[in-house]
Amino acid sequence: MPTHFVAKLGVLSLPLTFIACNKTQSSVSTNAARVAPTPPAPASSTPTEFSQTIVKFTGEVKQGQQFEKAFASDMVFRLVPYAGNDSGWTIRIAPGADSAASSVDCIGAVETPSHGDTKREIEPAADGALQNVLWKLREFEFVDRAPDCKMAWSLMNIANYAGELSAKEREQASAKLGEIRTRHGKFSILEARSGPATAGNQHGTLEWLKFEVDLSASAGSAGKSPEATGKASGIRAMDITTFVAAHLGELNPDLADLETACGEGEKPLQSLAPILYGDLDGDGQEEAAVEGFSCLSGNGGADFSGVLKLMPDGKLAVLPIEPMPKTFKGRNAYADLRGHMVIEIKDGRLHQVYAIYTGTEANCCPEGGERRFIYRWDGHRFTLDDMIDSPPAKSGS
Image (tube, rainbow, N blue to C red; front, side, top):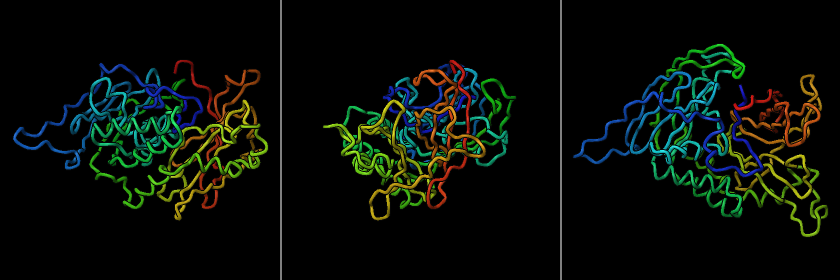
């Protein structure tokens, strides 16, 4: 099964219509397992606000089938199946059932930016253990009102993908996004039936799910205290670009003297990829993962990356990352790599992902799949915890 990227940083601009998810999803919905919308309140009463209701329901879905249920006013919960022969679903909440609203994602607008998130993806368990408690539960934030969701979606795109805007304008959009009220949702797998592995699904297939959805957690809650919720949005309001420009030497020691190394009139910081946010050290506060290009970057991709933390004194700091070793678990870590690294946040871990080259292919077109270096925070720095090679995705998947 092709690897499904999470929060993946890229340096090329991407059409906004594809920001909603990282996985190709089926556009066919004729076999959708539809559930009757929640009945509206009696005409004599004031329409019930979602914030005052308990939204909890169960459902079932088969492989390749879409599930959807309307709730509140103009809000629709969906399980969207992966396209083709890939096995799995993406959890989506949309501000309406029309085609325009279906391209907006009320979860993706406020969860980790960019392409996909294991909080929203349902795929066969890597170890085949369908009873694994961690695999059976998905928790996520979402915007619970259709107008707010559309606004949040617009602000998220501006904050992370509007390259024609200034850094200050993107940061202002990010700050406004952090002010929009969110709710906490839970998706629990109650029962599941798996199928054998296939060429495109090496961990097997998911043939059927029975699940429970709970969208009732109070506004602004993510299962955290208000203090933790405030901390989570704090770093998003910081001027990340200005900090990075002034601390390139901390992110990459080779860039410590760019004022003299850059050509005349060149700025040391050339560009910064969309910033990723996530709690990487387990303290309930989001960190920012950054990656970009300096005036010295060549054709090997970004030449700096790192993790920033908002400290208690309100200042940003660069968290240390263990240098990649030459060998790891008896393997040559650098074999068949040529740079072109991107960073991701997945399951609260920092990932560095490199393209693998088989030999003579051009730099633009690696054919050997990818190598993923997974880091964990040990209380002092990010240390390498695992190294995983994945084969190239099948053509058309």
